[in-house]
Image 1 (cartoon, rainbow, N blue to C red):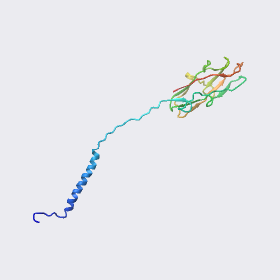
Image 2: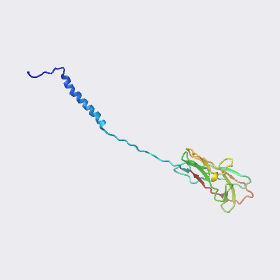
Image 3: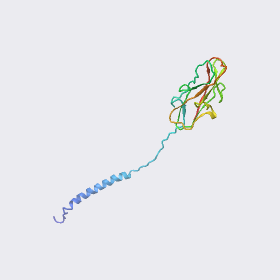
Image 4: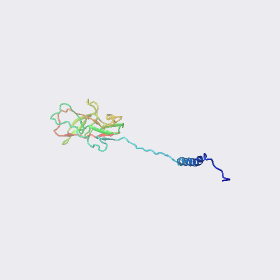
Length: 192
């Protein structure tokens, strides 16, 4: 045919492949551009909790003990020499649970019958007769457990419940006061 040019057959694959290659390049750039076109913004927030120091009597913060029990010197018909006893859990020992690391002091008042740092008193439940006694922080019974300078101080409370025994001494007396039951009530105060 006159006027028509013939394309060499060697160039035909390039003419067919070139549009396909260009189409692939366009699709690839669109995929890359779509992620490049997505805008993002970031921000932060803070999560926090504040633990305050806390203490309770007993071995559980959720169920504190309201009564530490009774230190009992037992029964006797004479009191010619001092009688020593040591508290136990549920019978006068001070069982405490606190936030670990808390600075804690444990104070004891001098009872309800006119006691002092020198001597506390139990009173007969039937009359005004009294027996002298004292409470100590140490087995040698040389450190009175009281208030002010006589508190037990724990500068950094441990991570577990602590049991602090009370070393008690009932003082000898002569003549012996009347028979009966003698009691006193001591208030223990935790400060943290």
